[in-house]
Length: 206
Ligand code: GRF
Image (cartoon, rainbow, N blue to C red; front, side, top):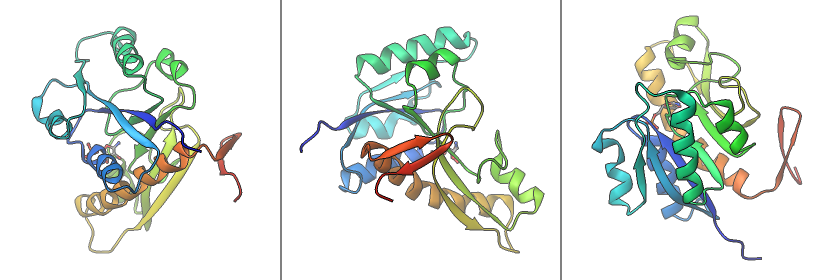
């Protein structure tokens, strides 16, 4: 059966390497059944969306600085709806979502976090993990609920912490795994072949 591609809305605030990994996977045919409908930044800085524009993708900026969360989120939700987005992918989006945003896309928002949740939620996760002295860290792709870095986990990839590491080298190796994990997680969600049982994301037939 040929289904319409699932339309992704990418939200970012920073350098956008996870966005580029997702776009690259789609272009390479490694992430089938998905297309990018719009790329949205909450920071007004042309460089952040340059890669999206070069790919010919629709982009939008809704600056969040100094605005009430709910008001800003209303603009973003409206934009996502205008672009008929099915699945929202937070890719370095440094902003908590309002409950209204989460409710507008129930189990339809993904995030990537650079640690093995539930360890080290919040900011500077790689530094937190390094300073704690863990021997294994990694990244987590999860659904977004109303709590920080909390929803059902779609997949995780691990990274060993080496004796010679510092927080920066660890973060770099985690980022390599993020770029594999996010397209793979999106592919699993886009397939529709899963159930969420409590907190557990379970693939059908597995
Ligand atoms: C990544 O480490 C991601 O896990 C975290 O923010 C960073 C974004 O990096 N949520 P990039 O903008 O995708 O390069």
